[in-house]
Length: 197
Image 1 (cartoon, rainbow, N blue to C red):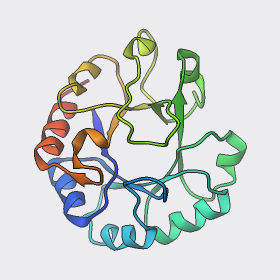
Image 2: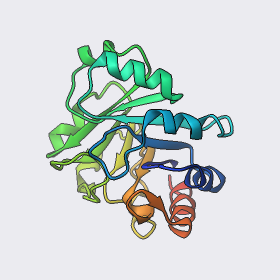
Image 3: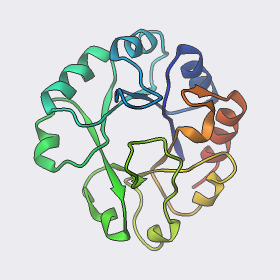
């Protein structure tokens, strides 16, 4: 299974994740988050990274124009839209996007069903809350376009075995403190996740 390590705030953590085998890194462009990084600081990290790693910027409550501007200036390769939008809003962003479904109930999994999307547990704040989704919601359905997030850790990521998710996304579950990664947790999470089908 592919792995995104989110909440990257410094170059050392970025390289730790890349060298451990992460497929994607997440940079939080939401000023109210404890994992916030200024887009220009993210650019300084991204410019030093090796090729073939997806660089994802997380956006909350921004306009399509602002998202497009920040996405291009920061050097990311994908804009993660972590608030409630529709297809019209996504189409107005002149940059590749990944919508997020903040799921409250099983029916929410059908939102953006025709495209790849990240599914996270609903909570009032945005991202990195450690709140988990009920995995039984995903039983017996095609999850091949879903990136699963929410409350994952090295200790529980093996529970995703057999659901057929495209990828998983982790933030708080690999931290020493908010905004700083724990090397052992990062390596263990990626190793366990990449062994899953």
